[in-house]
Length: 419
Image (cartoon, rainbow, N blue to C red; front, side, top):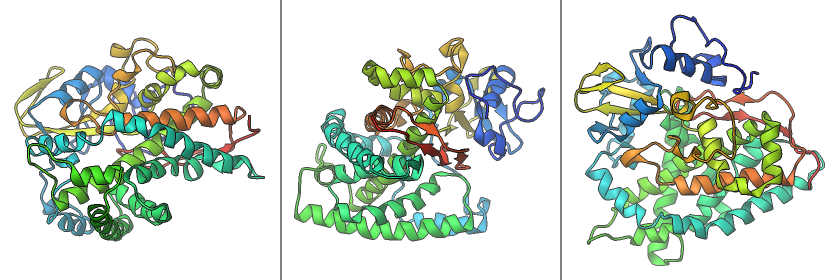
């Protein structure tokens, strides 16, 4: 597999006709050559499915920060495949996730959540996160076989354990709740198979019943944890309803878990393909300040984010009418040399302005969990490679074939000796 830092090769498909095709297996493995071609030749591109996609940093930034946009989908049930309609219908009686809300509803709910989900509360979790990671590394170190799947055995475990602990939920429940969450995560994608829909519906039912009981428990027996804070939070007499609490707590599991799994997996893989940067992380703790943002920039766990333009607008000279949905290619913007310079395709863990990436979005919908994800990614990756300095690939990795959430399905690793 080509390194992303190698000279840019011709994109998948025709040299003269750049096209964004998320279903192309080669694109799923390495979308960055295609992004480069789009940025150079067709930066506001309409693909064969009719999707309008912006690929340059400045254009992506413009769309994400435009206050006259909507995150709501307007398609009717008639536009959906038959197996997707049941999933849509089951969600119609519940308030939408904050991910699907526009101001002023989004503003109200975000203000409430921000009072609890603060950088200070995340900082309090740092010591606990280090403990979770070190306990897992200790378990891996005593295995006689040092071959692991980094995704299933490491990356998948950490963020769920952290958010579970933050919410103050019983450790004994973690395995089953993690399975429900994993099934629900697939609903963030635009296309699901019938089997994925069935798993998501069942997972959603189980998760809802579990969280209703957990919320009732925290009302009876409040504690010093995030779920209690969410139950009790109040702003000028306003509080979250029971259904809003359910939606928000479920989202913390679903959106906050899979993206951090991909940060850990994509980031570790990137370091393994850049031995000089891996060596720097192993020997210089000062990189801890920048590494998470550079890993997020280099291979974004979230590749695209859509906005419907609610007014006529011009993007890179292209007239976009009100009502048009524009897909922003976050992964492409994060590698745009027009913004990042000639080393945009290189992994540089000391990059001083890496935090200007758009992997967390921008504007009013900037990710609420950004501070938590950065903290988890930094601790999980740095402590892994410092504990196992001989870490190496043990086979060919596979990707998860997702359109929005880019990550590995399997990442075979030989841990080697423990330091």
